Length: 379
Image 1: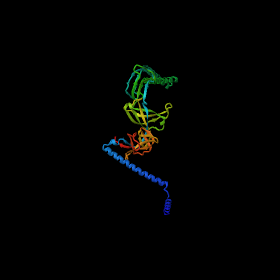
Image 2 (image 1 turned 90 degrees about the vertical axis):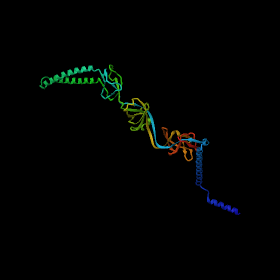
Image 3 (image 1 turned 60 degrees about the vertical axis):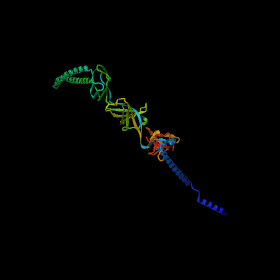
Image 4 (image 1 turned 60 degrees about the horizontal axis):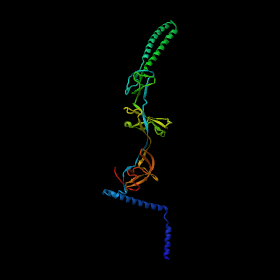
């Protein structure tokens, strides 16, 4: 009877104390997990130390089966930029075909190819003999007309003679003066002058050949300043503006140079859906020639203070993208799931999963697995 009584009292005590709550159970389990994780971490660190001792003793072969030799890279946190590279070519606004306003035989070409010329310099002379004879005749006629006019004026001042004769004499002088000015202007046009300062690039017609009005005789170019032009896809409309910095590259002459966008086209070409980008460039040494082909690298997007990793180290798995980082304490590779942002020029933005400062597995990233032992080798 007494045993039954005491059993009954024990049940009452247990009932009065109550069962643990779910929160208490969860807290207890989490505490046990942390304890076990700390033990595992300590064990792995101890194993890694022992492995290093074996390596120091020359026993590499004993651990080579389950340890991967890797190199590491630091996770950078810096500015991210995106660039687009488009083909470009050099042109010159002052690239002129020089012709004559009138036809005639070329009496002399005064310049040669490659020669520097100044603005207004005579490049070639056309035959102007007929015009010179006309000028001589007009000058004689004008001299006579002026003499007649002076006599008619003296008489008219004395009210001798008719007014009509006086006015006809005056008109004759004015008409001959205009004809003489026209003839002199035509004679001047037999001198083919350069409208710009530059270099004679090509002579098309030589001494003795016939030139027609508008027919090119020479080509003169000024390469002191050139323009680099490129057609850019309409996808980048609004992302490029005058004043933006670009990089110009001309592989054929081994040239790379920073420059500034000088103009952005406002019209989309309906044929290829592009707009024109222009960069003015000094060309003091003359290395840049019209129609020289190169490229323009244009920054289209930038974001400061971004976590960046090499794109080649990002792998894809069932749950998304991931990389391997090295736990320097345990000396193991740890699979880290990440959320990717933009990628360009071999770099990817990590939006989540890395904070910067971690060490990525580089060489050997495809051979390691989660929690596998690694040995970091120096490059």
